[in-house]
Length: 263
Image (cartoon, one colour):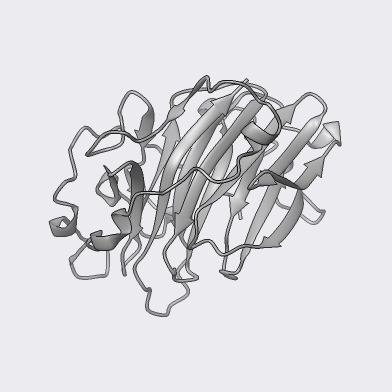
């Protein structure tokens, strides 16, 4: 599924009182965003990293989330508006940074969140993110992706979803979108069984020769067809997207331990 991003604004409002915050979604009563409670457990290690195994060198940009409150306005544009495909809301209040991790929650009415990096807005590079989720509702889809800067290249719809979990919560997919949806294939894909409730490291390398994906340092996706590579510079985004189907939604969350960019 394409993750077309709507206009976003940066928030500077601290969200220490996240559990008490409330939003009204059209057609639904006001409901507090889920309390974070035990989800703020600190990651105990950084796991197996593609960057270390493959000698990517030093980190040149990213976020270790070693602060408290809202995501850094110097590093992130936090979405504030309608959700994916106009369903639900992407709210800055869905995010909280504490104990070394960033947490985004999705409530029973589709109030969730996403944010886009202001750093490493570049053509080619290496990105790695450490992520886990709750035992989530299948209607909440966590996704780590690269998106075109300023929506450049929208006529070809380039998008690199290098870790995306959809309705089947046991699978993580790599979806390389290289053309807009239509009667012909428009994306290269891979899928792997992954327990997303455990910490894993998801990485992507993009250069003039192709795109490769890694999970915990292991190669699981590659595409060397140059006609399918993004045509312009891109940047990291983090999203927990809501895909309602008319049945009740169970509150869910996604956590990010760190985001690291390498040359």
